[in-house]
Length: 252
Image (cartoon, rainbow, N blue to C red; front, side, top):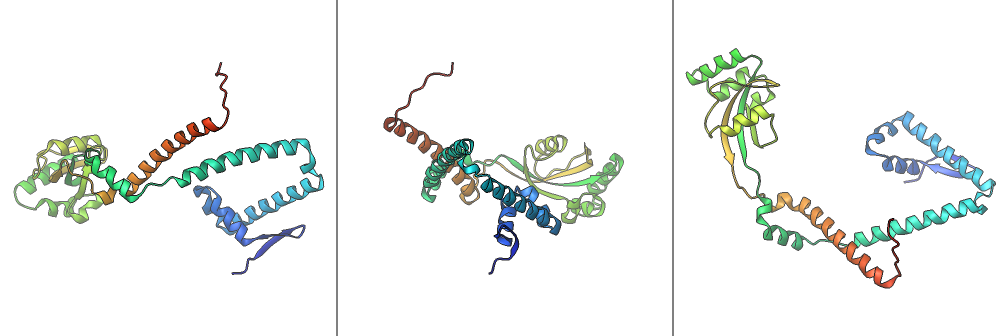
């Protein structure tokens, strides 16, 4: 696809491809504003301004000044350091076999925290909750039917089901009640939280379950890669110390 020239400065073209690349390199939270017509216009003006300063620098022969040469050498040194470290780190890899071996050798690290599965009916007042508890106990409605009829929580569409959750995932009052109850039981009295009054029913629990390998594979790979990169980096530094002269004078 032919590049579209958006502007020229002293005959040097600024293209739509260069503009889009600059947008892609911007922080994620800023990219949206640059995808608008006004945003692109502002960015293009900035690119033109940068080129104008470049032209001014060339006209003044800034490249021949001592200050410029000094800063350029410092930048080249920093870039070389960054390039070498990045290049070294990229060469360090972790195989799928290494990930699997670690997973199999450390089973205790992959035990999921205890969790409960609960359904609830959320109501704005305590008295409403008390009345509905009585209706369920008297057989007027099942818990699920009451949730669909009365709950003000979106979970009403699925009978109040909140699926599985572990400690730290729910507000404290709800969590304490849920983990104090037995599977198959319902609260005798409403539980108050910042959201209102809850009637809670515990439908299932999971304890001591191993997290499947496929679930943790990607995060485990990143963890092991980071560990391996750090180890290889420190080893490489020690090897290089044997090849190049290093003298430490102390911090103080």
